Image 1 (cartoon, rainbow, N blue to C red):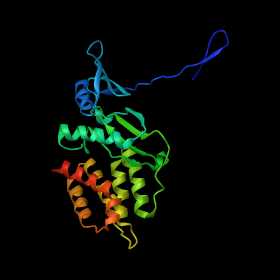
Image 2: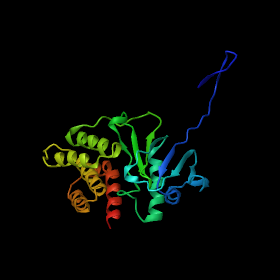
Image 3: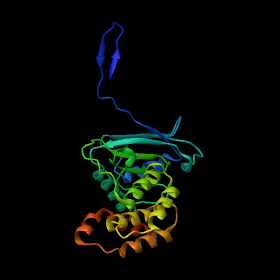
Image 4: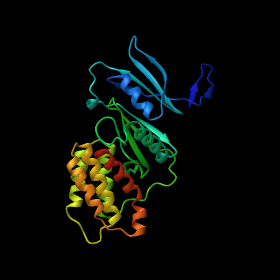
Length: 249
């Protein structure tokens, strides 16, 4: 960044850090949740306004408490750029499993899985929705190898549904997209794409507090026949299915 100086010269300023300040109903709930994800408290105050600062390596977040705040009505959000979304997701997921016995996939707080985002040039991304209803949106920082554009009707339906639910928070629209695709199977459908759609539909069902549909979708996953090579391609979807089954139990 170039900053003008009074004598007419300019200097380049580097190493700036931006720290988001996000709302919540309880800073204590925020601290408890983010400690699960590996954060530690850098400062905390009660007066004149309840506020807290949290840090995990180079990731800094700050929160302020509002009496009577409704997380469901929050517009709080920020972007986190990282060189490896998968690594950060796995660290967060491990913390959740240790604390809660499962990865939180429904309700508030919860976390989505890393998926290619067609509205982010195909780069991988996932979101943490914290107890304040804030969306911490994690994206790949280096555009080295974005995922190829989705192919086939199931792949395209999946990509559109991810935009609706994981990016925009509209799980109902995502469910409509996926249900439409699943309602008209075709002979040349990729069975791996079918598994991915079924698993994601189960996840969306849990976000919508519809465990019966989630159970039905996971049961359908078990009935999809895959070759050894296809099973390898579907490994991430099966891992997600395992997390969903744990969350349902």
